[in-house]
Length: 234
Image 1 (cartoon, helix red, strand yellow):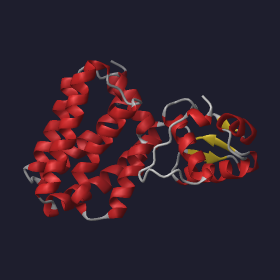
Image 2 (cartoon, rainbow, N blue to C red):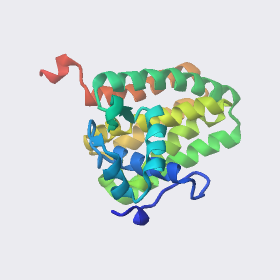
Image 3 (cartoon, rainbow, N blue to C red):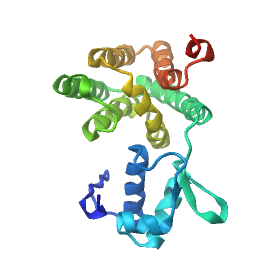
């Protein structure tokens, strides 16, 4: 698909610089699996693919290197970061550390508007799944936005922009793994139930209970994608 036909979503709705556009297009293709893990990213090929000059493409690649989606290969250019159990374990460890503290602070400081945001985010996700039945999946723009929006709403009152920024980046880094897990979910009702239970713990202002449930929720991806040896050998 030519770059001119792609939609680049940005939080502030502005067109952004060419390097930002290049980073956004690359990120979309990596997360959607159109650029496979480990695949080489040649500048000439990318110029043709996205119809963007070599300099802003290199800048865009550098942006994604800092986010862990792309790695440099010495003087030979760039490639898409590999996926592995170790990588997902590292992402999960960082998400757990950041989000458990963020949820604690949000529960302490959250007001009625924060609670309403959680309820609204859950309702929107539920309605989307009701409309799409069990066909909902990561990779559909509407579902991706609503799913991330719910998890962000839980933490929104933490009072730390850096924590929220770390949550957003780590959430996106786990996306490629989460898509694998989502293929195994065949019940929209069960998916919503697990998120409803998490929301209920948070809204009950149960810090310890919410932290434990959130940790289990975050670890569900790695447990599904890379099950323990005792389970995978059954």
